[in-house]
Amino acid sequence: MQTATISDHGFLADGRTAALVDRAGSVNWWCPGRFDAPSVFARLLGDDAGHWSIRPETDDFTVERRYLDDTLVLRTVFRTAQGEVELTDALALEPGARDHDIGYRSPQVMVRSVRGLSGEVPMRVHYRPRFEYGRTTPFLIERDGALEAVGGASRLALVGSVKLTCGDGEAAATFTVRAGTMNNFTLGYAPTYDSPRPQVPEADQTIADTAEGWRSWVRQHEYHGIYAEHVRRSALVVQGMTYRPSGAVVAAVTTSLPEELGGDRNYDYRYVWVRDFSLTLRALWLTACPDEMQRQLAWLGRAMGRIGDEPVPIMYGVLGERDLTEHRLDHLAGYRGSSPVMIGNDAWRQRQTDIYGEAMDAAWLMRDRLDTMETDVYHLLRSLADNAARDWALPDAGMWEERGIERQHVSSKVHCWTALDRAVRFGARIGGPQDVARWAAARDEVRAAVLERGWSERLGAYTGSFESEDLDASVLLMPLVGFVPASDPRMLSTIRAVEGTLSHDGLLRRWDGDPAGFLICSFWLVCCLALAGERDRAHELFDTLLGRFNDLGLFAEQIDPWTGEQLGNFPQAFSHIGLINAVGVLSDVEQNPELGSLGMPPGYFTPASR
Image (cartoon, rainbow, N blue to C red):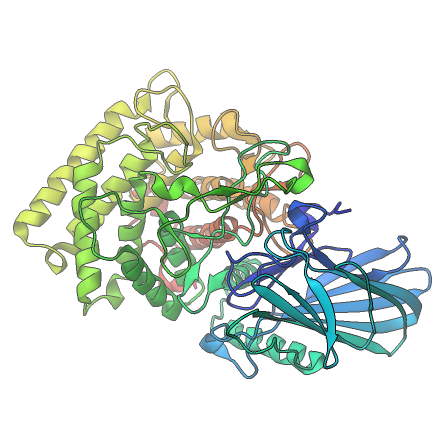
């Protein structure tokens, strides 16, 4: 029975997909091939959806885990009364792949190595693959020295130094590990048809080569500023959530982990949101990743294609797919009974006008690298500006993706202003004098509307939507895009109101009634405090948030302020990107304490921040 919590899990990646391994050595999530592919292990969402565990035979053990330095190779040490055992887990990178070449041709292989550290420890392995989210129980067949699992469109090949006894769709064994001895397991995946057999390389060499591959990437992205350890770890996590063939970063590697236990806001996050785009590029800028930044912008241009009069899609598959139609998996009970379990995400159908500003802001951040602007980028930026001028007054689903209702969200208006402001700054590079004048007029109109209709005299704050009395953490973005200085009296009042109403123990909820603290909102608050001149409080809050990591430095989307439990899909790119960008603001303010009173200039992270 699966009892592990979200934060009990470690994260493995290979540049195409990810796996989650809990503290008891059980692989409870793996979708080989690409992040949104059908699973072969999914016990995270249902007891019968497949897992692969290697653990001490006794239940009486303690655990200590860490990643090998500058890698996503996980090392778990089990301590029992009989002795100590080390389990090393990795998703393999292509042999010899280094630097920016990692992840393009990963072999779809998981390697697990068990080594005795002291004493004699009885161990057990339980292998229970279930394909397509637990729908298919494969046949287990011993063939050519491997244990093959075949069913439907998938097949696995397991090779190990311990012989497993097969049962009905599962296999198991017990073995004893002595100090200095080692037992290795290699599991390869391949499609059933039109593909060679799964690869099963030697485990020790694969682990060593994979670790060096990750370290070579880290060496290309040195960061030596404040909070360096946390920035490097978060940057590595974001890189692990990147689908390397296209350069797209998924929001999370899981689906349907709930925002609230027993709740129904359970969504598939294994896709790419335009909203995340600008924030991701800011994080890549801080961590010195110009190559990834350019690949991201190129990916967005190809994914969006030529923009017409139709609404611009707000999210895509990792190769730019648009149709992400949602399906319920009613055979799965969900994480700790939280149903429904969904694949696909119908938010792709929504209108969310904030994406114009987020995409345009990302391009502005890269302006020095766009001296020679490709035709597709030129058309993309013009279209984003034109759409912002046309659509800013329309209601939308907002950045929190309300379903079944549209409102005049203040954050959406602010981001339309951002799109128009950056278009005016690009000037003749993307439009003629009449275009620039038209964009400037629309920009000023948006600003006037926000200042008048987004402000509540009763609350003394900007609110979540026009003529509303409801506070919303999304308005903390206003100083971060340069709409208004953090030190502006109205913005200061808003920061205090949002923090006073929506914050509990350092965790900021999105709105009153939101069941848990939304981590990136808490990092936005860090930024606003720093820019408002409250640097000590900003650092204090940031340090409090660092204490909310799991033991491996991983964040989910949300944290319950009262229990401390991590909730939502995991790991969450938004949370780790929020951490990196907050460090960027803290660093900039340390270098220029007057920055907040001047207003954050567009493209505010400077090279000196890195």
